[in-house]
Image 1 (cartoon, rainbow, N blue to C red):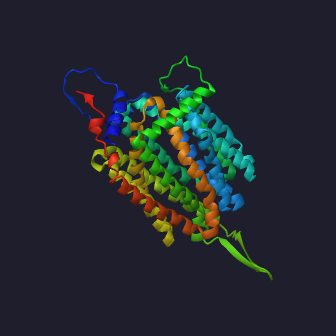
Image 2 (spheres, helix red, strand yellow):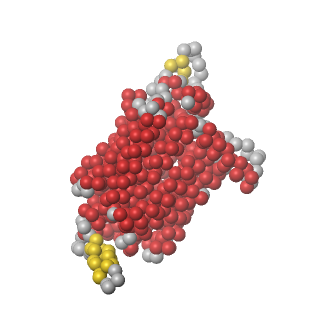
Image 3 (cartoon, rainbow, N blue to C red):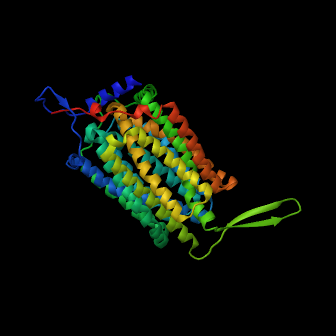
Length: 468
């Protein structure tokens, strides 16, 4: 594993633009947020992210409310989430190849335009099959967008400023994840499906802003033609790199367990509030000479569904607020907190949050537990992002991000598809709490296997030297 640390530092060093050496003594200069603010391209990217993330945040809530309202089926709701995730497996890896071959800027702008156009159609669609088609298109565009953006950020900022820059990016994301649910539920109650037009406009604004940004692409031979053979070769190179790098392999293993647990439990919060907390599902028994039939039907009590929607928005907002605090804290205190501690506490917090549903907590309890989980998860995600970026060179970064995304999304699609069926069979509470138990067990195993995440304990001073 020490060999991997050495190779990762070589990748980091090669991405840093060194100043002229006026002294033979090399020292570490602590990066600051002010340096990130002076990076004009990154700040433009951040402003585009503002609109894109706001549209995403409102859409994530609105689509669940919309599907659940027209079907009152947990299975239908989770299946739509699965369909939206499926393109990450089919299209994501190929998008990563293109992100390392052609203009990353063009890919991002095109993906934003497609998302904006697809969402425009949603208010006119009430069929679950029509929604599924639109969800697939949105997922395909998102999978195409993420690989070039993730690959470009380290090149825009340099690895020395990457942790600070990504913490600001996460700050914008989580701030809008707070505001999105707070706005989404009231907006949906007032405008219903027309709420999707707001999210559509956000993606178009993001596309316009991206047009004014200088976004670096991978350094490749421009004369080399992009053929089916080169696509397959590039894809294979990305997979081989991921398999050879021990640190990346461990990160992928962690993502695997985390995705399995969260994909089972995450989509069930809204049904929990509606069916368990507000007890809004009536159970009627019909006896026949042969069998007893149990039929579930929604109770249309005045304001009940709206109350569940509002609480769902508040819980999402408080978790995101916690993530903001966690991101900022870790961005400022990374050397003091340490990446192993951030990863361990974040993993435990996510597992504990879902396990707590075994005791059927009320609204205030969910808010408190969710806030703590958000803080620790914010530190966790920032530490993981930094580790991944430091260990993947620019030449394969697009493919690496897309291949990893595709890999973890395989489990996401499977778990989304099974989650609703499981909840309808054994109950929402048991499914959520069971996911928490699974995450607690896997966290304990990984902690022991990695000797308390020793692989993550990289000294930033050694990783990012600069000249005096």
